Image (cartoon, rainbow, N blue to C red; front, side):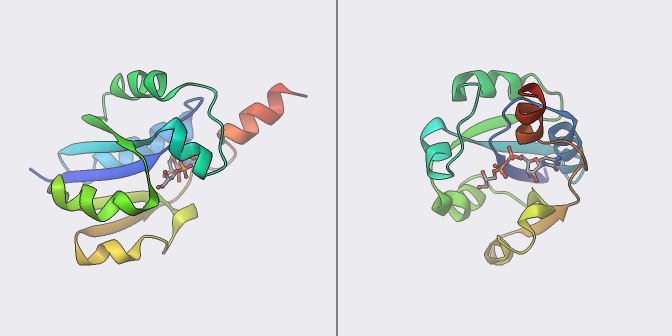
Length: 128
Ligand code: C2G
């Protein structure tokens, strides 16, 4: 079984997230999403609208997602890849090159982002 892993906050779920998850899942047979905890979001200087628990429930309802794990630190990726026997690491290309250290452990794929949508844009548009 070819296992794929990806990371993110996945707040205010939108089509950019779904496009990423669908393409990530298509690279293998099983997709793990490592979801940023509220504590890790604080480290990323992000405040999610939905709690980790709610964001996890929402992600688990997506047919492309097989498993959701918590993301606590920047440093856990190698352990996550090794401990879960992951074959492919996937991120949107806003992260291009940032996780190439994982190439020693698995395939690393950066997928093009979906233009014109982001959680930040949604928040900004709602405040207009
Ligand atoms: N994404 C995308 N297109 C968009 C918006 C997001 O392809 N228009 C992708 C991002 O590139 C990322 C995923 O959707 O791969 C989740 O995006 P975020 O929730 O913003 O994740 P981020 O804050 O980048 O967290 O350790 C890595 C971090 O947890 C990544």
